[in-house]
Amino acid sequence: MIDATMTKRMEEATRLTRAGKLNEAMALLQGTTPVAPARRGEETPDNAYQGGNTFDSTYQVIDEEVIDEEVRASKPEPAESPTAAFSTGDIKMPAAWRDKWMKFRGGMAQPEQAPSASEEPQPGAFTAGRFTNAAGTRDYKLYIPSGYNGQALPLVVMLHGCTQNPDDFAAGTDMNRLVEEQLCCVLYPAQPMTANSSKCWNWFKVEDQQREGGEPAIIAGMARQIIDTHGLDDSRVYVAGLSAGAAMATTLAMTYPDLFAAVCVHSGLPHGVAQSLPDALGAMQGGTGPLGGGKAKESGWASEVPAIIFHGDRDTTVHPSNADRVAAQYTKSRQAGAKVEQGKVANGHAYTRTTHHNAKGKPSLEQWQIHGAGHAWSGGSAKGSYTDPKGPDATKEMLRFFFQHQKA
Image (cartoon, rainbow, N blue to C red; front, side):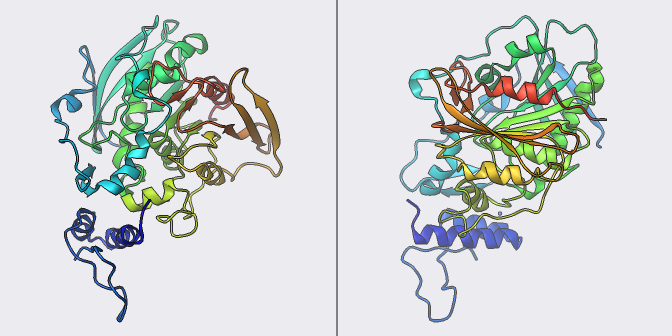
């Protein structure tokens, strides 16, 4: 449980970060400087602390596996004591806060169901590559189905969650097997530990929430390069993600609506509601916990990109209220009224699906509330991490929704 002292430090770190005083914010999070009372006459809490945090591009296809080079090069930190600091990007924080942030690692997977080392072989080609533009460099994996013969296939960009990698995410979502039937290519960008020590996409950093800058520009540039290289259909480009990857997917829908024909946000967060790590922790709590300031923060962003949203109502990592907050950012093109359906997977979860339509009568927003599910990819395979095989099948439903949409 986060006490008043910790909350005070979080709030002060947020203020300092927004004021551009990153060093002071980092010192506060590291617990190196005592807090001054906020107002004259106010007592300082015991143990409180305060600080005085379209480009030219290249790419290459790599024969050997390169996705985890950065991981192999990085040595893990030693086992933590109760006061050990945890590095998140460029900020170190006390272990109590670390636990909140590391809930992004949480989910259905348990040690005894550790995923296999690589995605199960499929008939198509699963190749590794590396992309570079002015915004940075990222490795990726690309799945090309066996039915590809040079035709203009759709492209789905899949953004993994924290601690995952492309092979793990491909295995857990079972995506490569399904696109053998649906015929589309799948791009899996990889977030290295050098960019975030938990391999989370940095959805909570201002520099990674903008068009033509940061991680959105890298991912969008990578997608465009793959489209050009393989002659894919640039009117049928889609993006999906889980958890931190879902937050980055919705950021891409907001910042590159000209590129993406639809988006899938699974157990994710809205775009632009966090500008620092304390903001992120508050948003993960739904904006109502001790880090959330008492109410959900609004970002003012909106998009007309069609969206399908999945969220378990027992998610203790990213509060389920975030699903409604994500949906609210995609209301621009939908009509009043919605169709609500109840269903249940055989021997699995019950769910509520709410569908909104646009002026042309096409589904523009689908929201799936999965009853009894936690922080995991719905209907996924136990061969990957953070999956819930009890369904419904998010991958299948996502592809169905995607292929109903095409840019003009």
